[in-house]
Image 1: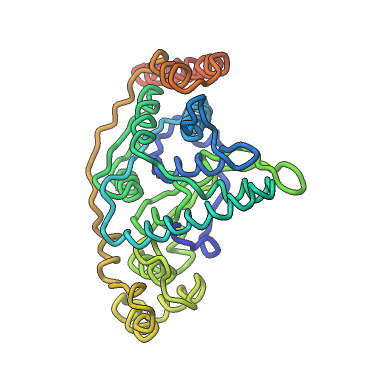
Image 2 (image 1 turned 90 degrees about the vertical axis):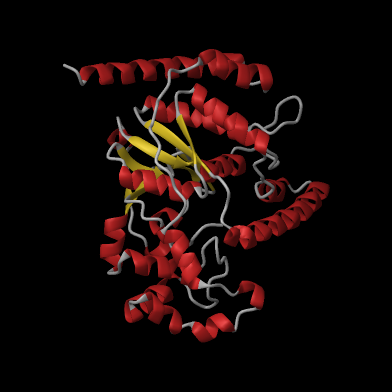
Length: 346
């Protein structure tokens, strides 16, 4: 679901060359769900192996990250731990959404409406424990460091971005990273670089959002940005305050400034919500201000080609020829990184 404040957030296009040699921390679940929803067959079903096990996420992890590593990036993936109890409503909503999408997919399948099958099929996505385990295995075999967060992966990624000088940015398609205080947020990094549209293919470039630029342009501080997000709706209060969109929320936080006064101004609207949609803004505010996070010492291990082939080729029927070609690229990227590290000593 995520926070929707795209229309008011300043961003800049980013060339891959600008990221060479930089370490970025990726919100793993966010990106894995992106792979599951975008890397699919023409009828909307995910990629699968001969045993009908989903492999879209593994394909995304391997091919997209080989490309990024070849550009000279260092990658850290952060996985979600135990979600806050407040996130339960969001999870219930997503489950209902999947049930509805499944009904519509089956109807489209009977009508042989492949466009609708593709659309609804992309909504039938769920990460299970086995998929998460194998994702970690493959990432580590590729020399990518994996962090297990105690709670929200996005909060952990933002925290590591704040405390570690070697981290350039967090990576996520969602804007919650900004509310968690990430100094920089990169979007579109793991998307396919070409996207099909009605008028043909368009190039997709990464975009960078800098928290300082956001706060300066909007003329607010971080506390007010958190309040703005709560008004619009976060994963902890998905519906927000009905009738208050991004621009109206910005007007409110600028006018009332202090969190207490901001939410006093909408108290009547909040109490008019159905009981199941009401929320305690202070509880949500604290989740963004003081999330459960831990420090982590990054260790980038050697690429394990045998393990990569065991996961992809032997377990999941990937083309050995295609995997070998990507391993050649990965080997070259590893050698370049090694030479760069050696160069620091001379």
